[in-house]
Length: 321
Ligand code: AHR
Image (cartoon, rainbow, N blue to C red; front, side, top):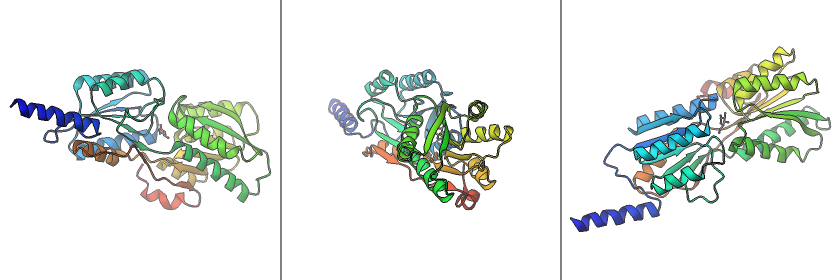
């Protein structure tokens, strides 16, 4: 009996050290998921995808909506440790300030799966796998689309003023989408970001901040928004100011949600760079592989496209979110 117990301890320790499961596959798997909030259509689709995939796989999902507040997510993570869940899934609202709670998760031996966003903690030992989008590439794709579009319009020598609606301050996508976009426009001296402010990834703030950009009375040629929701809010403000979105002001957003496709089809939106929220099946696959003791890749990037008036209409009927 004693030998059996010892063997079990050794197997468990080895499995954890080599990235395998520390939980039994013969009982219902319990997963805690600390979500950011419900700030955008993207996030709502992401939550549904995770909940549906877990339900289908018979996983006991303990889901917490952090309402875009870091302290709520930290509390949820600590509660998951207390509950002794088998796996923790986590999408951090901002990049910094997680060291302590993640150390607690690691000390408790609970495998951590990062989904969508990451943290600024050095190294990659603290999580087993991360799945999501390459946010820098998304920013680059937005910039590249603009450069090409202006060329086609014969405006590539014109001085172009861009206003930017940033995502949540300190979040991975806000930092990286700005970085990627700026990198591309820096090669084009006629393109200049003249105003930039956060809209926290929400429609309401997108509209309010765009109103204040417009009130300054400066020339605005392009709006670059770090997500579709902010762009859609801004479109409202542009219309209320008596200007034509998509024509007087070029609109570029990120996510590729259905509402953005509809706005493109209506001629009020020019380009959306896709960011795939349907991470549920991948997340569940990772949980199952962990339970089976398999080693997971550290990073899995989603494959994503860029949609504009030439492609959005055709893709609209099959758009899931
Ligand atoms: O982290 C992904 C981003 O978060 C999406 O682009 C945005 O809409 C969401 O709120």
